[in-house]
Length: 161
Image (tube, rainbow, N blue to C red):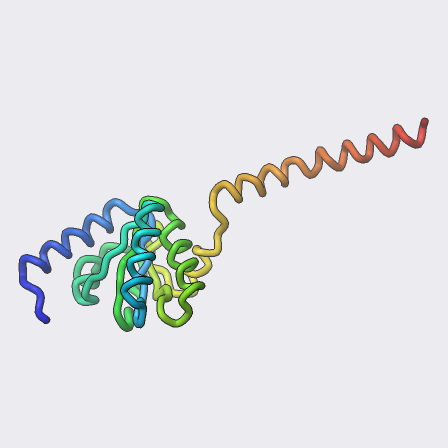
């Protein structure tokens, strides 16, 4: 079914808003998802602050043409756009949902901090642990030498006693 010119302009405006307000944009192929799964995914994304909507590939290409560095990934199948001000959250959320619904939804590519990324690059970005986990890992790295020093001092103290 053809879209009216006014509807196309609305979609282009929404894509421009996504382009201007987000650190990360993920192109998602969602072929074969049923309505219940799609609704559950949309609700989950919305709760986590990720915007998600479906747009025609031609409108996506028109809105993003020349806006980012590199080459836009090939958009195959039915495409949706997931975006957020958080740099890795959209990719993480889509990857998590894709794990539950194999071959029905997957990352096609995206934009990360102003540069087009391929499917494999966006999947790697999605594998970055969340910020609290990274902070915990950092604290562990800082704590490790101190822990070693304490164990060494304790061993010396036990030898002299």
